[in-house]
Image (cartoon, rainbow, N blue to C red; front, side, top):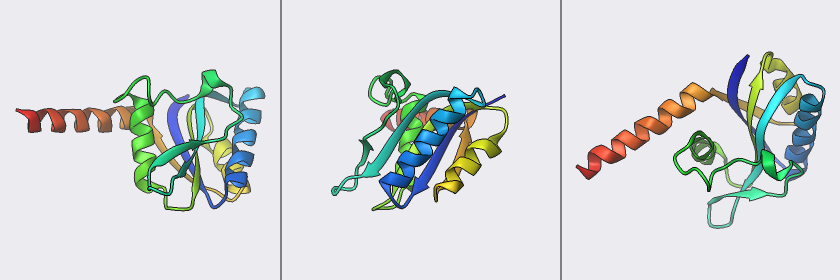
Length: 136
């Protein structure tokens, strides 16, 4: 089993929402374990903002509660790749077969980006130590 963050980028919010529904269906059928998921877009000011999502509140990413944690780091990385006018589904998953999510995303017109929890945590730690070294 692999613990990953999956970012799926779509031209429309409707496509992102359909992929979110497909992800919830995969989780309901036991084909992936869904830890959290959130739909995002880019505001007029260029900021990454959560958009309407039908995930349960307990399954939403903890970007505000745990700044600097893996959820926040994954959202920061999504912000770096999400073009203006596009929408994204960002999910923290445990998966055995990545092709299941890949197929669901592509079937809804999306492009998949995947990073392991280890890669996300390492990137966050590098940013933390880089910032700490600037403060010294």
